[in-house]
Amino acid sequence: MSDAYDLIVIGAGMAGTSAANKCAAQGWRVAIVDELPYGGTCALRGCDPKKILRRGAEIIDAARLLDGDGTHDGETSIDWSDLVRRKRRFTERIPAALEEELIGNNVATLHGQAQFVGRQEVRIDDRVYTSKKFLVATGARPRTLEFPGAEHVIDSTSFLDLDRLPKRIVFVGGGFISFEFAHIAARAGAECIILDHGPRPLRGFDEELVRRLVRRSEQAGISVLRNTSVDRVEPRQAGFVVLVATDGTTSTIDADLVVHGAGRVAALDDLDLEAAEVAYGSRGVTVADHLQSPTNPAVFAAGDAADTAGRPLTPVAVFEGKVAASNMLRGTTTAPDYTGVPTTVFSIPELNRVGLLEDEARAQGFDVHVRFTDTSDWYSSYRVGETESAAKIVIDTATDMVLGAHLLGHGYSELINTFGMAMKLGLTTRQLKSVTATYPSLGSDLGSML
Ligand SMILES: Cc1cc2nc3c(=O)[nH]c(=O)nc-3n(C[C@H](O)[C@H](O)[C@H](O)COP(=O)(O)OP(=O)(O)OC[C@H]3O[C@@H](n4cnc5c(N)ncnc54)[C@H](O)[C@@H]3O)c2cc1C
Ligand SMILES: NC(=O)c1ccc[n+]([C@@H]2O[C@H](COP(=O)([O-])OP(=O)(O)OC[C@H]3O[C@@H](n4cnc5c(N)ncnc54)[C@H](O)[C@@H]3O)[C@@H](O)[C@H]2O)c1
Image 1: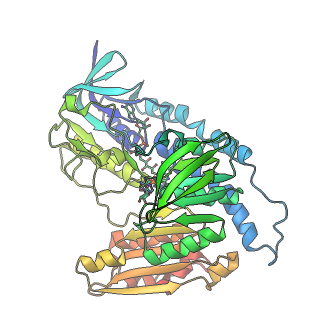
Image 2: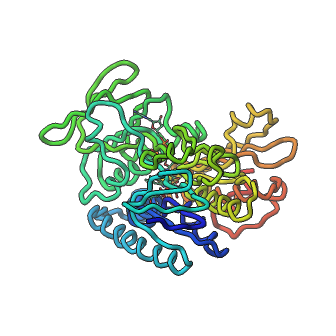
Image 3: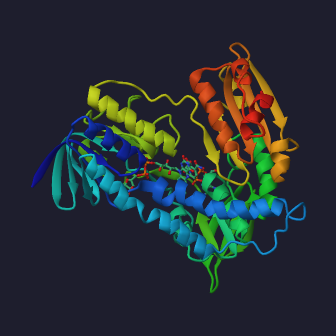
């Protein structure tokens, strides 16, 4: 049996749903399919549930920072299973609500695993569907770990749904997931170790700010081991032994839980892209700048599943989905504009970046003026008792525009958006300094950072 559509979207996450709604609104016959409940990683297994758990950690941290300095920390503590139940109350309602919204927008909602069986045909369960266009929006999955005992390592999805938080936790990889989860777990009373096989964690962020975040992480009870790789994980009667090598020297770490934070890769394994003659690589579906497959023009890709210049982040998935939809609808070749897309590691305090690192700007030939400010004695940090906060702003001397902004500090994940907006709109620092913010607010820190 065969069903014909104008567009079939594979993956009901951020990229897929934004494209499906946009094309259906223009009268296209659109279907979307997911093998899991609708909502994708961000809403069900990533950004949102993580920040719900983080809220508990924020409260603990805030109380500790002022303990004995105007407040008493007392008995405030995280009840992990209650916090996870609160998270579930949020995530559980999403799939049905999202599906209802899609149906209301005239998108046909399908369930099952999609697999290409031809250039313009997919099979979902035992049924074959044909379509003029396809959008691959299948997201990412944790990278396969190669060491013996990797099967004992839990992924981020399982961590976010733990009923009980064990005492000793090892995080493999020193990136977003490990830092964010360790900062939550440490405030919930766990002893956390982050190990990274490279010389420094969070390589995509400003080195000096990362150094300060590591210092603050250690104060919160998180050890960060560099140049350390896992040789194997062995189960014991209670917990695990993690055998590691640091700069060639081997040692063991006792753990109750080992968590995967060693990177994610595009989730393409089950799609049989060969059957559709769609080229792909380890970074995702190969696409031209306007998100179309060069080997099969019926196929577009967006979000974590697409090999683009955009980072694997939710806002990028959303606007890539929209750009792909717009190009499909109009037959245009518009490329997504990634200027000013900020990113945040939701540690406590949070680490933020938008635009170029200082080294990148210099390597690209810019003559830069760098403003580094330790903001830990500023009013905004003193008020909450935060001891590690700083800003580095990289400015193009020729144009006076911001090339990159790097912020570590309480609440700075909001402030980084203003820097992103300034970059997107091409504002000069002179213009930015002329803006008035309410006082005292984080926005009022901005002018002094320039
Ligand atoms: C723990 C964690 C925390 C994160 N926190 C943040 C954050 O704070 N901020 C941020 O910007 N980003 C964050 N991210 C990244 C963000 O979640 C992703 O970049 C974003 O969700 C990608 O959206 P997407 O639409 O490309 O893919 P997804 O949302 O992953 O959607 C893909 C969908 O495709 C489905 N699928 C896959 N293969 C098939 C198939 N063959 N057939 C049918 N369906 C299929 C999957 O089931 C899934 O529902 C986080 C990621 C993780 C893992
Ligand atoms: N706040 C956010 O926006 C957010 C939060 C979580 C995840 N994400 C997205 O999800 C992606 C995946 O996150 P992640 O934290 O898993 O990956 P990551 O790419 O951020 O970091 C992975 C780290 O693990 C290290 N590593 C890799 N293999 C290793 C090994 N075998 N042993 C030790 N170290 C190893 C790498 O050197 C790197 O430092 C991110 O790139 C990001 O785009 C975003």
